[in-house]
Length: 291
Image: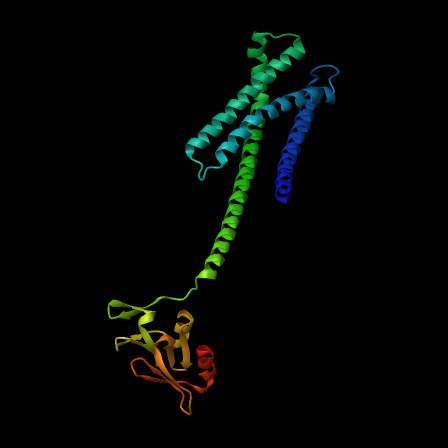
């Protein structure tokens, strides 16, 4: 509902701008004609409202034909890129509408002023007169409308695309959260660079990981070890819950232990009979894991 009201409000703003431009144009042209009438004594008894009536008729016709232009701009504004062909077509539409305006207004004015239609007077007097008087301002008016409506329709399309992106983000976030409930972000393998090659080690093949200065040593069930450029802290966040930090220098795959000694020198014995010490600060974590 709010979006609809916002859309209507913006459309009202565009209409108000166009109406204000139109009113100013009508009043300006009426005052301009009144000046020439008074200055050169053209027509006796012609006043402001007489001239305003004629100008209003002319601009009403102009508004009626502008609907065609608005429809055309609406159709072309949704393109990602306006081509030179579109520009030429738009120019042709504007010039065609100006020509139709001049012909239509000339016909109305000749009928009103002379009480009937006379083709000769239309071609020799009215069309040339309105072509010189109205064509420039009508053309500029249509260009202004084309520009304003192009911006309006483009803004409307952008708002639709933004809302679609927001909806897409919401849907993807919901899907991600749903998947996260059933899956974690833990890695199933370790990717270790050895020279120009990469060694892929499934985490279930890892016995324990030992800190070694700025690197770590990954000990596997095959009694081999690989040096990896990483820290225990970084690996601790990547590995699944089966791996436990038991010492500041050791992470153990708790599925690979065969004996736990929590005496004065607490330690774990792995399946390959390697003993890994347990620090006093991590004894509780080991106990909690084994419960």
